Length: 212
Figure 1: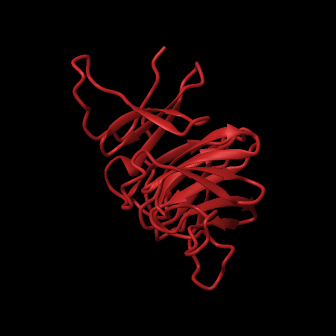
Figure 2 (figure 1 turned 45 degrees about the vertical axis):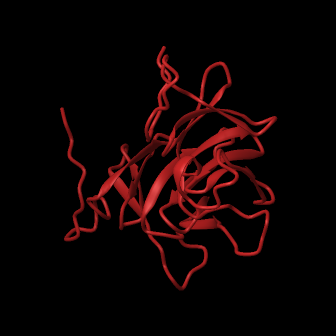
């Protein structure tokens, strides 16, 4: 059986927007759906009820943007939502969010407000892929440490635009960029380009998966 989930503005239930594609299953069995214009939806399959979370320009505790690009449920149970252009959101419950964003003239803020992907580092920190490098984010202080594949490139282009992160079963971290994939060594900050067997560079990579 295939069930179609779509927007239903007449009855107020269903998705908030039909341009939807990012999915996440949380620990309680709820399905989170990120949309491109309608914020994020939480669907409870046991009750069939949707909760819609959208940006309210007059409420700093609302979702920072209605364009949600990434969803992540971390190892401590916290839910994080990455946006297209307004940074990261930590779900606090009761429809409220804490925003983590790039702030001009602050060295320890996020490096960019477009959030492509999020993975765990440990219980206290996350790796956050942005359009300008990968950030190691301290969840308690919201301070971020920046790592760049191309440190001499000061623009959100090329290898510095990081589209996806993968931590393998052997605890290696791979980074997908506009200029192909890299193996990342956090202890040294080194990014090792991954090439073909002939040593040729690979083109843009948007997502990665470890097979078994």
